[in-house]
Length: 112
Image 1 (cartoon, rainbow, N blue to C red):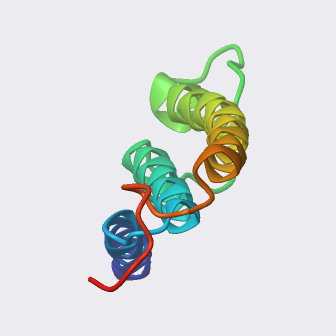
Image 2: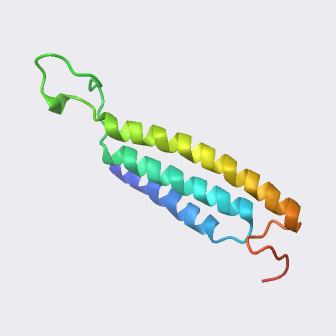
């Protein structure tokens, strides 16, 4: 299971970096989104996956028997912030395209 999660994080991170280096703004936005997914998955996995663990405290049980709620709260917050940031980036992308007539990061169309 750890190998599958590590590969998923690596593929998402690598794809995100590759898209960040592309010349078009939409690809850059998608690269940032994939990178945020990779970081969210990494934070979620660092917290540990506990199956059948109670999320709330019961009387007479030790702390080792519970799931850690902090990584879950961090990932949930990051998802909301990432959604808002992606929406803002898309609005800026559309405004930039309207002003310059190009969707390239440097504002220039043409051969490399």
